Amino acid sequence: SAAISACEKDGQPEMAFRLFAQLKERGLQPNIITYNAMISACEKSGQWEKALDLFAEVERRGLGPDIVTSNAMISACEKGKQWETALRFFDELRERGLRPDLITYGAAIAACKGGQWEKALELFDSLQRRGLEPSGITYNALISACGRGGQWERALGLFEELQRRGLEPNVITFNALISAYEKGGQWE
Picture 1 (cartoon, helix red, strand yellow):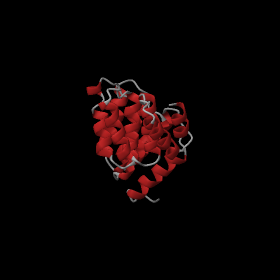
Picture 2 (cartoon, one colour):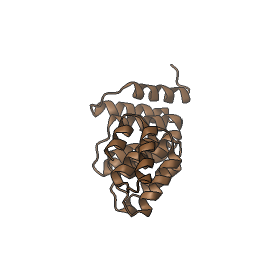
Picture 3 (cartoon, one colour):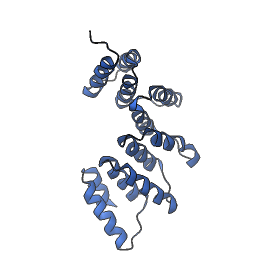
Picture 4 (cartoon, one colour):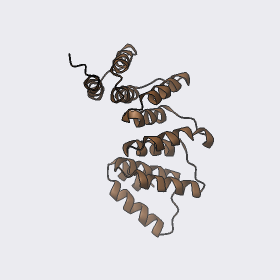
């Protein structure tokens, strides 16, 4: 597990896949931590379908999933541009007895960057109702979703809200805002 996690964190997903295969070839049973690292490796390498297979294996083996597994799955689907699947995983959390955290919400909002800005705003409202404080990463994903949905005024309002909360905009924030202006034809 530790070696697989190290490979995943070090950006070496292919090595993680090889170690995982060796572990299973030797008759050893991966635990939930190993599966979480593998699903994260799939996310980082753009292999969302392989992540789905691993998730199904976690369920078949009765290992969970836990919130880390779910967050990794939502992120893997988001990276694979599978927003509907990502949001299905988000919606199923409660059925699994799990409570979404800030990472969960951020990943689900990021999955809405394909222009599902209304769903992104709904998730953002839910996050705040639960008493969670949005991060700069959360705002970046939300600004991007609104921008891609042609909602440049909402994107600007979110940018201003981010600053009022004392969060620092970064390059990603400005890129999302510029993109929102461009999609809204607001080049002034």
